[in-house]
Structure formats: C-alpha cells, structure tokens
Length: 196
Image (cartoon, rainbow, N blue to C red):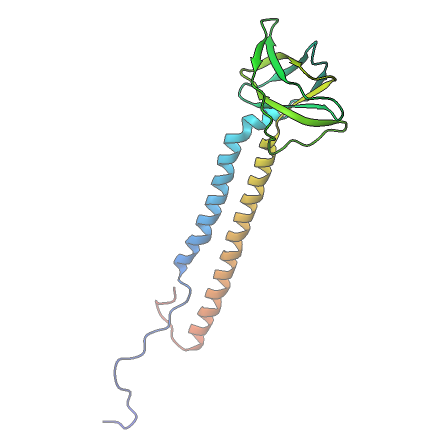
C-alpha cells in the first residue's frame, strides 16, 4: 500500500450552475407578457375604436347629435358654472325618445375639458346616430366617448415591456452565471459530459 494513496471513490465532477433548465423561467415570463398584451389588445380594440370618435356639443333641450357604439360608455360634461342634467333620453332616426340611465360614477378617464366639468355618463344601447336630449341642465353640454380603453391599452403595453425586460435581464444573468461556472469547472481540470 502506498503511503499517500487516495482512499474512497474519486471526487464527483463539478457541475455548471445554475442548470440550463432555468432558461425556461424567462421564456415563460416573456410569453406571458406578450400573450397578456395580445389578450388585452383583442378585448379592448372595439372600445378603443369607439373612444376615437369626436365629442359633440349642443343645447340639451333641442338635442345633441352624435355617433355612438352600442355598449360603450359616453361622458356628459356641463360648463363649470352650469347645473348637471337630471335626466336624459335618446332617440334614433326621428323615433320616440327613450330614457337612458345616468351614472354619476366617475370613470377611470374623465378629465375636465377647457370650460367643462364631468357630471354624468350613460351607456349607448345600440350603435348608430342618436339625438341626446336632457332636462335639468341650464347650458350647453359636451358629450364624448369614454377613453378608458386607451389607458388600459397603454398600461398593457407598459406591462408587456416590463415583462420582456425582466425576461431579458434574467436570461442575461443566467448566461453570465453559467459562463463563470463553466470557467471554474475548466480551471479545476475536470472536463467531460457533465458540463450542462
């Protein structure tokens, strides 16, 4: 027996860390970010198109004509010193006026316009050109589509960009860590199939 002979099994080959399977994490984050954005885009594209329509102003007694999209919310603004309407009705193509439910709940996106302030909103029952008449308002009204969809799409873009940036940062970090680990393994003199 040799005096300095090693005893026991040989030491295991060092492995490259972290494991290559960790690359799945940034891939999943990137895919979720892109798919989430696409889902938000597809579910809000109709509302975004409706929000692009121009606002209309007019006398609430004689009526305000505007093009509406069914199911979309429209915001009614009164001048700063004027009272808000107490009730409103819609008519299409000269037909009878139908009362519309007004909501005082302020939507996510209801900025004041020059000399107008947000007062109430309503949901269009169907698409087409309508005439909106209101009672209780003592001055001109401004009616515009709710553009909350633009805010939602903007936040979706920011979320998707953040997700892709996070995935890229994780991928870069993993690549640098694995490269340093491979260099340590090579420096130790161990080569072989376990470099993964």
